[in-house]
Length: 240
Length: 240
DNA sequence: TTACTTTGTGTCCTAATTACACTATCAAAT
DNA sequence: ATTTGATAGTGTAATTAGGACACAAAGTAA
Image (cartoon, rainbow over all chains, first blue to last red):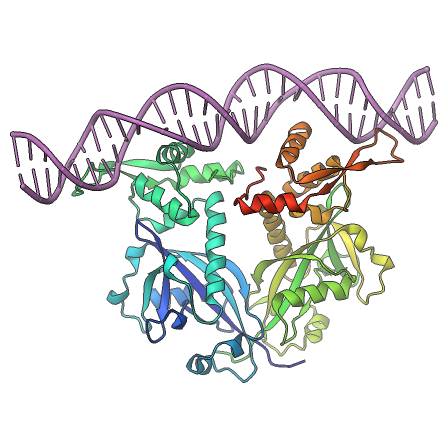
């Protein structure tokens, strides 16, 4: 048995929604070649909780605090260091030859407006890429992304986490398109609206869209209090 | 930053069903004191996949192969080594002072008859303990057990994994009690039977119970083929 | 033969789901 | 001022699923 202990990193799948499709934050490690794009991640400190490490990595990258974060699981097989060939990255983690990396993956939901790549003053620049356009990523990050999508799909069926992807004020159409984007299937407009309204976890505001070249839409906000009531009853099924 | 790398272990929550309640395999590390009971687990080898490590640990412990295993997630905060006081265990993992342990937790579903503690010829003896009776475990294992129960509850709603806990031939009543035990809520007998039969993933055998002091029950087997058909349609909701 | 135990079944009522199409309201262009 | 284009917003009917509920049947044991 090799006595080397593995390195532990956290990788984050940060989802954002642009009112049309799901996007993910990726770090461009050179060209525009997707095989050189990676999920944001870093080694954990020795004194750090796993969840805190993920929070830190995201804040270092985007400056966003109070981010919705959820663990996906642990990834990393012993061949990972051999499969990937990025010597620079290997050095950057102070890798001894033969040492492996185990990564604990997280997924995160943020309001896209909270992170605008070129406005950021952070070292590595991450950029938003449509989830559908990603067919290759560095390391095992494609597998992690895939797991993140699955976890998100499941999770949104039992908890109202989608609101983390929308601004405080949003329209039913935006919420509708969000659910369609996450679940990757069309949902009937009227049935969706009826269902979401019956849940009674969103409240209409005294405000409508303005400046849009069509009928302005009613704005709503997520009603956390009413949702808390539901969970106390053991509610865990949004029926999608 | 401390340069020590953490140790990685796998811990397994092995569920078994005795036709009445859910049980878990725990290792008795001394007395009958539950604070000294722990989930089976071990350090991973450096050349080992995470899933393989979990498979190995279980086989070393119980001799069972082809076990249903699913990752729950990674656990372990930097204080774990301080919180727990078991010096013997610390030594057994060759722990440097200050080194932390991160554990990747798995849950596993086995047929209880496949592992009978005292018939085993394995070093550490694990024993079956009713899940409901466990209110304390060593390390952070109670937290892991709790996560395992939650994961199992969710998972059984979308995949027919419960059959891993039953023998090849089982009765509808046994399946019924299994679902009640996992979901921790009563399910109406007739409604349960109707629902499970409509799914069409179990097939009656030309065989009935015998030797029981009551009306003998029809035996069924899980029909994997029909289930595969369902999944191809994207079916993922058992409606519990 | 009786007592005991568990199996196995059907109906009614309510709630949830699906499929489906037209009018209303705004900005922009003419 | 009128038209065009775009999206918002709404209801109903038919089907399907879910929940509550009680009694006869088939075996063993006494």
